[in-house]
Image (cartoon, rainbow, N blue to C red; front, side):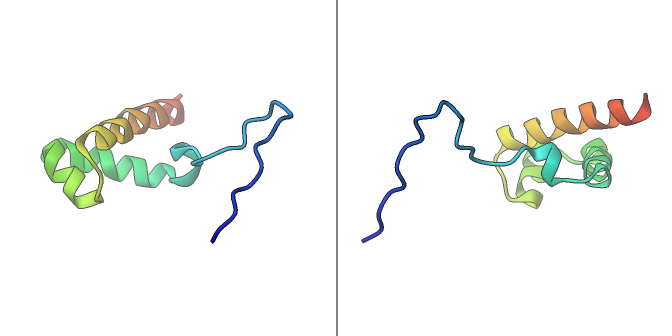
Length: 71
């Protein structure tokens, strides 16, 4: 049986998933936006293996990243 790690009591968040912006490159985001021009959300979600809600978040992040890159 697996034992659980003790809960942190020092007030620091123990973490979780890393930010999508850290995990993916700018090229990945620009490719996603290019596919978004011709594909529907359900098609993109199926291609990337995520839900429609998640692909919407990816697209929002992609727009932010490419906007920061162009400035």
